[in-house]
Length: 160
Image (cartoon, rainbow, N blue to C red; front, side, top):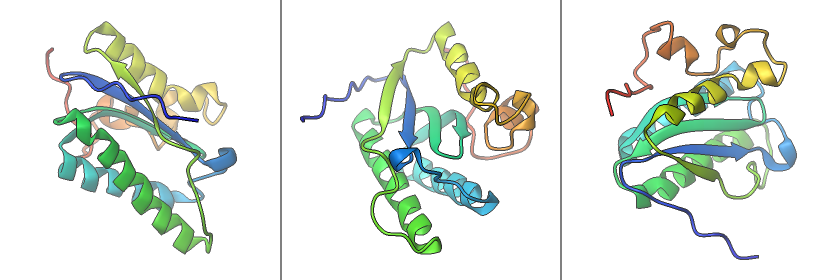
């Protein structure tokens, strides 16, 4: 089956999602989450990706941001997913695919829906039953964005 062409737009944000193959866990311990976030930082600098929100769930990832050159979006996600897969497979003595197919992307226009998308992403742990409160979950951008936890990974939205 042919892939549907990805929509790429200037001055737009993207809600990016990638799930573990067969919904398997892609994060098994604290170090896995930390390695993934470190790789996000590395590749966001390389490709000019501004990260506005994220949530790392045990078997999938949500990222929200914009990229300076929309055609580089696939390269950003390819490098991020490939490098993390190499780490994961090496650490857990696995082979093959870690992720289920291509990443999904949805264009998010910079308007009031952007904030709703952030709330949706950061609310994932509560909806899935992993935590009772958004503030209780360690692997989302909520702590940085709302509680002003110092971090260099998240970019400020600014005025649009």
